[in-house]
Amino acid sequence: MQHIESLPEKCGGKPCIKGTRIRVWDIYVASEIRGESPDQITAQYPSISLADVHAALAYYWDNRQAIDQQMKKADEYVEQLKQMTGPGPLARKLASMDASSDSLSS
Image (tube, rainbow, N blue to C red):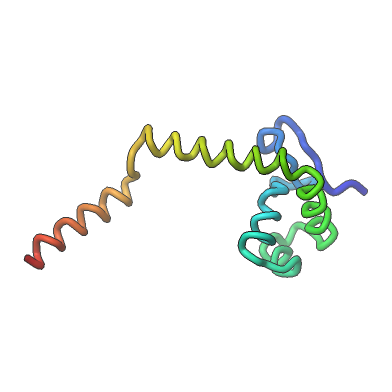
């Protein structure tokens, strides 16, 4: 049974665990960046099995360069959006609260 699929209509064609929208890179980040165990990952994503987690990690390591490039492009896109739109409503509100608390403490 194959655990990983890449379909153009799902997650922009990025490799996912079959039958889900959980990307291989989501599993990689959970395991390698956040240090979660496979059991913790399956607890976080109850629709997948330990075999799915291990298959996703194996797929990542077999295709590391391509997936790292996908993650880099996604990060760059987020940064472009931030620059185009500026801070969001919450960040603006927090900044205004900081400014008013500074003037109160003077």
